[in-house]
Amino acid sequence: MKMIFFLLFWGFGILLMNMEFWFSVVVLSLFYFLSLFISPLGLGMNMMGDELELDTLSYSLFVLSVWVLILMFMCSSKIYSEKVMDKYFVFLLMLMLLTLALTFSMSNYLGLYIFFEASLIPTLLVIVGWGYQIERLQAGVYFLFYTIFSSLPLLVLIILSYSNSGSMNLLYSLMLVFPEVKVLEVLVFLGLTSAFLVKMPLFFVHLWLPSAHVEAPVAGSMILAGVLLKLGGYGLCRVMFEFPSVMLYFSNILVSLGIVSMVMVGLICCRLNDMKALVAYSSVAHMGLVVAGLYVGGFLGFTGALIMMLGHGLASSGLFSILNMYYERTGSRSFYLNSGMIVVLPIFSLFMFLLCACNMGAPPSINLLSELYLLGGLMSFSKMMLIFLPLGSFLGVVFTIYLFSYSQHGKMNGGVQSYWVVSFVELNSLVLHSLPLNVLFLKLDPFMLWL
Image (tube, rainbow, N blue to C red; front, side, top):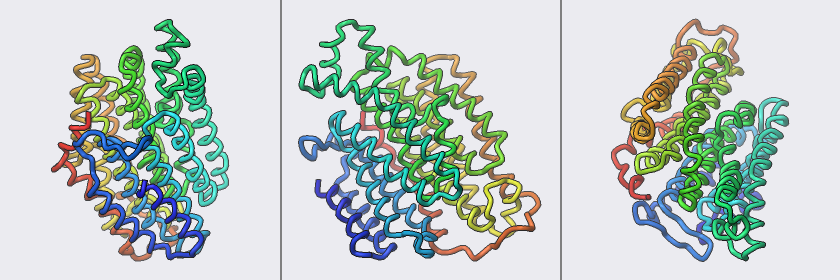
């Protein structure tokens, strides 16, 4: 609780006391390193009160949230230098971290629902307030209505549960109302998973994601790809631990949809000419593989899904940050206007290569280990996966190489605005994205002990 109130009052303090932008980065960094000393990794559940708890799953995603937030401050230095409502921007980011911390530490479904939805508010305000184009309003509406309407069944289930039994134990309460097993299974499946599958998002309910990413500022894209998509995976993990029979009942459908997401989105990415849209769609492909791994279950499925959520959060956040650095220099996200960058910005080409390699699962990144775990789990589920999984992985490599080669090689555009000197903050943010991706494989055993 001390940690939660610290975050709350720090966000309000920055707004009211007119504190410096970079001072908040320093304090957040200190807070991050202090939080490592209360790590429950591999130690089971760590209770922090009647309503708060922390285990390896929630703690890993919370640390990822703090890490990505620090990098968001670094990549948003232009907002501070141009004084574009920078104090309100810092306040919204701190409020976002507060809601994420509470979401990952709630022990009941009501608290999970409240803070799960509360995280939408600062994200929506960041997209609408600091987005690039006028279409950001439409993107904000898509983002808001998709996520709110998909989570209404979960709210109905919570209300039914509490009104009929006075308990937040959903399974026990719903069995009193719906004694028929089939009705109960369908109801629980629709109510508990619809909100989380849209948040991830799964293919067919992903239309809000590309527009939200494309129109959001770099901080909005980084927090969306780095953390907010992982809220769906976190919710599915919590649901599956409490309702394993219900999830297994629908596992064939969801595993198939996850693999279809991976293949279909891979094909879509191969024909895009917007770099930011390509990275946004690639998130749908990776999250489809996470959904398939979660519904397969078992040690390989759950461990691979957790490691992929962490790896994808860092890799996609890093790609969005470096694409924003290109956008600030060329004024465009198109491949045609960002070609030949290796000539003028070779240091960016190095980090672009490292992040693309991690995004497609090249060694020694943790993305490779997660794909190997998920491959083993899915192969034990069905031998048919031997056809679709290599195809999905191949398409992932194709569109990642397409992103790197078309942006770094070719004829340089002559009508660019300017190529100013690469700053220390930009290099530092890229290093802090790339380093954990290629170092964490040395110590992955805590993430394998959370089941």
